[in-house]
Picture 1 (tube, helix red, strand yellow):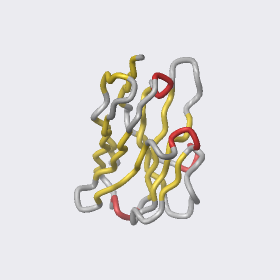
Picture 2 (cartoon, helix red, strand yellow):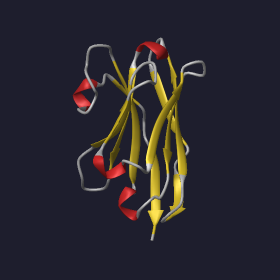
Picture 3 (tube, rainbow, N blue to C red):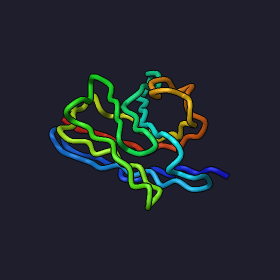
Picture 4 (tube, rainbow, N blue to C red):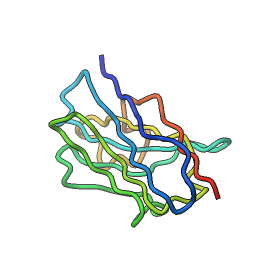
Length: 125
């Protein structure tokens, strides 16, 4: 049974930072690409960034480039999202997801087969 559990969300002022974590269990974490998505109220879920199984390759949505960094620790079965220079428009529920091999760069939510429950990030102005 695959389980992904996000943590680290909360309320932060604009310009501040948060680090989200995603603890994985139930499959060989190091064999799978991972991704972060977010969904704001009234909006569709959108791609934030993805990382390869080794951590050697990362991709980001344009709106987070230079502000967010994805990393992973395969020894700890944990995925991270470091978010700096946060803006009110970053307010959303953030989800981590697991991507099987062969599903490319992971821009599309359809590339992922397991999802966490989400963690709320709220950025005040």
